[in-house]
Length: 289
Ligand code: ADP
Ligand code: MG
Image 1 (tube, rainbow, N blue to C red):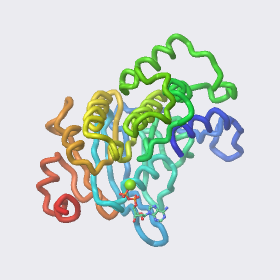
Image 2 (image 1 turned 90 degrees about the vertical axis):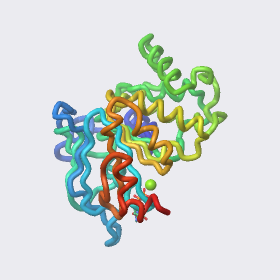
Image 3 (image 1 turned 135 degrees about the vertical axis):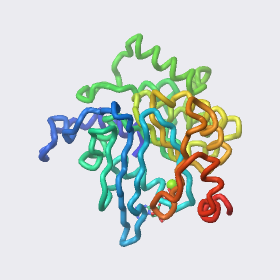
């Protein structure tokens, strides 16, 4: 499910839930987001099995509030499964997962997790191809979930400003009235990132965001992510080591920025890019190939 589906579903699905622990809106009741302890995401001993195969095997990961964390690792390491667990798409067999210090992700449905402030970008861009760039962003605005006609609401001047700011941020200002289907692959990726950001997520999960982009688009994407760091926490999964290099050697905490290497469902190594690049096990399973 993509971000916009989540929004559309949120707009349309206001059926009260009958299950225990759910409020009238169908959210499971959970804490307010609390980042005051400095932790944005906490995964503890997460295990996910598919027919006995452990896609995640006692995975531990802590992301600080405002941190930009890059995650690398071979295909099949469990990177996407980890995002599936965080977003409620896959339930782990064991472990715990918290967003901030209070929000227990494993007690929540996918929809409620998205609403709580976690945005996810899948590898393939999933924009509404027949709508304009502007309309795509408009649709992503946080709207009152009870308003079934939210799609047709009139934009306030604040909302118009917000869309204009976003168009600039994602380098699509001159393309605002263009049909999204006509954008380049990289531009579609940016539009989807913009659609995610319109919902003001505090934690962003980005799965191979620069796959298929040109070098120039990749560089601009690095700049964009670096500009989000601090106000947002970002988890970026990528194979493009040049891109990882740009993300980790720029920005406020460049010297201390961590890269996590996943392998066979657990953390194989974690440290600065230089640390993990010099790690023999990492070279053996990933970088050396
Ligand atoms: P990555 O994103 O690091 O390439 P994935 O998280 O997609 O890795 O996959 C980890 C492992 O789990 C792979 O071996 C994959 O085949 C397996 N896997 C992922 N999802 C499923 C599923 N729904 N059913 C069965 N196996 C799965
Ligand atoms: Mg993957």
